[in-house]
Image (cartoon, rainbow, N blue to C red; front, side):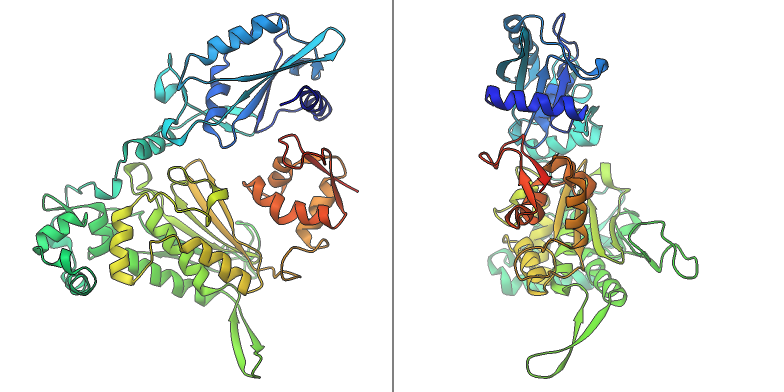
Amino acid sequence: MTELELKHLTNEICNQKCEKQTIEIKKAAKGTPERLYDTFSSFANQTGGGIIIFGIDEKNNYDVCGVYDVQALQVQVTNAAGQMEPVVRPVFTVTEYEKGKMVVSAEITECDPENKPCFYKAAGRIRGSYVRVGEADIPMTEYEVYSYEVYKRKIRDELRPVARATQDDFNRDLLNGYFSKLRLEKPQLAKHSEDRIMQLQGLTDNGIPTVAGLMLFSDYPQAFFPQMSITAMVVDGTQIGNLGKAGERFVDNKRLEGTIPQMLEDALVFVRRNIKNAVIIDENGKRVDRPEYPIVAIREIILNALIHRDYSVHTEDSPIRIILFSDRLVVENPGGLYGRLTVNDLGKIPADTRNPFIAGNLEVLINTENRFSGIPTVYEEMANAGLQPPVFESFRGNFKVTLYNERKKTADVSVPGSKIEDRILQFCEIPKSKEEIAAILHINTPYYVVTKYLKPLVEAGLLAMTIPEKPKSKYQKYYKI
């Protein structure tokens, strides 16, 4: 960053008197602060990295106290960063905030996904890895560390054999139907014996059924994995805990079990039963039922959850959840985004696949497409239905998709005056960052908030930027005009 940007950021911190998701402050008036490694780790592990600001005293009402020795501080911070694995390379900026009071920033860039988690070598990978939550550096759970190892080491949890299962647990009718389709769609593979095909397709491992095999072809997969199911519920309101007219906690509440194709179909039946339908007259004068949400989009989201959920031992007790609120439909699955993909990349570039054998077998079983079409289809279906774009969130081992039933007021952008835009305008009486605005909207993707809400409000002349000459600056804030 430039010296001017550092001064602006220092002013912002002193006025707001708080740290943030991407900002950590350290006093450093008498020496190098201790325990820098937890912040090095958390910033290097989070999307976009973060910035450490030295020379502000949090305990003294965020007073700018300045650093003790700029040169010595940079040397000692660099030495501390060298104790990380992989090594962190801070980028320093120095400015004189007030006469005789120097402020120093150290920008920490995000690690390459193949090198995550970044951890403090002296503590080891498990104890020395951290994640940023709000303004705090929190030790990673064993599962969070494992989720990075899965990608780096290409661990296929879907292929782990299930010791207490035998091939008698397979549904023979399902397998026969599968082999019949293989003869038509993959004739070269179908030339092998059935036992060989099952080994090659990841359904067995030396004759023992795998997780993938049981989830696709078992008579009852939940006999082995009781929570590898779907819990579906309908809430009479916008939050869990809202009671219905008769005092009921859930209007409808069901656990869906069976193979992946069975759970997909049962989930769609549940959603169809519980969403509203509007009767409209089409351009030909015919009455048409229009569902509250496009069924094709819902199918893609649920199918993605079943294909891409984490099937490791760490999440065996975590079902997929479908929740229908009065204003939105939410689908959550255990396992955050896998590999190099970020939320902002969804629908734009092909994704790394956590469970390629399950995905490949489903292409044969139910004619799914594992070719980078699911997310674009969801966007297209929501747009064609005149609804807001889907919201995707990935955090701490969980992936969440939200579809809102509020219809757009124009063909392209949100119009100021809706509930969300009104909340933003009210909140921005004092300049706020995109992260702060995303937080009050309960959206974990600031980039989505910028493109979906903030840019249209700026273009409408209702919001302004504090740094208009640099619209993409990390230190950008928005305020009501």
